[in-house]
Amino acid sequence: MAYQVTFAKDDQIIYLRLIGEVTQEEVYGFNRQLTQILRQSNQIVHVLIDASSLTQYPGNLQSLRRMMTYLHEPTLGWVIDWGNTNTNFYFITSVLNQMARVSCASCTTLLEAIQRLDTTLRKRSDQRKKLIISRLTLSET
Image (cartoon, rainbow, N blue to C red; front, side, top):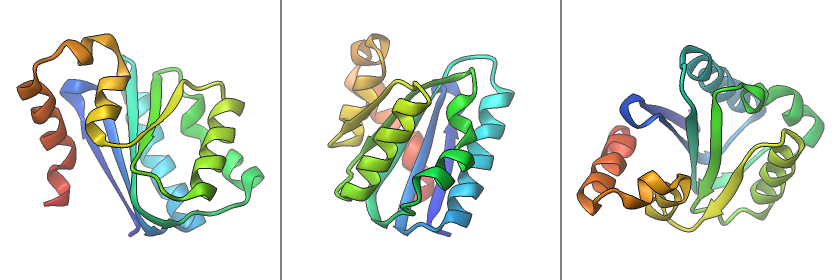
């Protein structure tokens, strides 16, 4: 599987890690997981996309637009990708997020992405930020 989904419920953050070559079937799979989490939440949930290990991403914009239904969930907050060096992925996600009218951003590091989410996260202590990062990336170890 070329992706991992982790939900830090206490922080209302979904961490989506994309690894290697991601197929359309895998996009459909993580979309299903994200949609389920968003529908079960009664609060705003942010999505952080770790694209630092991504090498290839599907390029059919229309097909991806139909698959990425999570972008239209009312509990979706910010969608922030980080670590992205794949220009195809950057272009596609930018267009999809704009079409869905989603608040989105691209960052260099996970810490920068967390700080970008909202002012309450920026004001948290460094220890709290490290705790959030460890919760999100726990499945990677």
